[in-house]
Length: 257
Image (cartoon, rainbow, N blue to C red; front, side, top):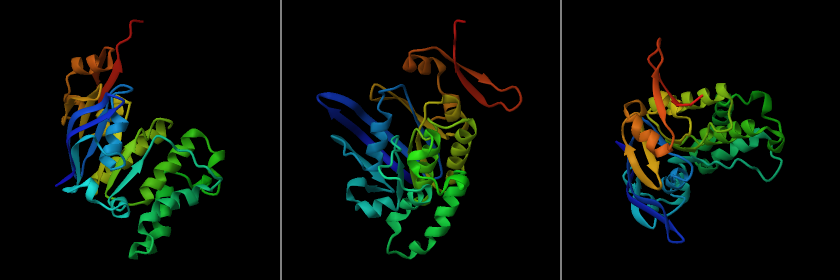
């Protein structure tokens, strides 16, 4: 079954195309990474896939239904979105911010699961010692983990994550991507914008590589992608290195030092 399908998606602002004729298919039960340099269109594409931004041309379907046909609350029960912005205007404690993720289930039978879902999300993001702290007092990484926990608490089948590892230390980067893999293994779907190519190689079933708003390559795991194409898109030479013990692919820039 296909969780998300995009066909011919084009987004234009001020006469400039942020996305051009983008096609994408994301099967259920997979982790799909959106890759590309700054300004390639990754966040714009994620917002279109989420239904938060209407394309100028093209269509997006979630679970076989046009995203424009979903009512907002209904859509929120099917997909959760983590944006790059993690600011909270008021001094809410971490636990209450995480609980905000349960809003789509208010006045439904699943409201009875709120306490369990919030506790599970706090546990997954390792926020036990922080749950009573006011969010504005947290570090950038702690705020990012709080935002991720809110997304997890929503318990939607599709997660759309925009750079969830950007502010995190090594341990929590790995834990976040491991959680994405676990969600996919349980039948969920994750679309994630990520800059760390080694993380994408380790955890994504497939990738879409964007360049200047267009799809340069899509579908294959990163380890199967042409290294010359990656070097061209990022405008810097990169190489794949196989870990001698595990065989895992490490992607690193070639340095002249």
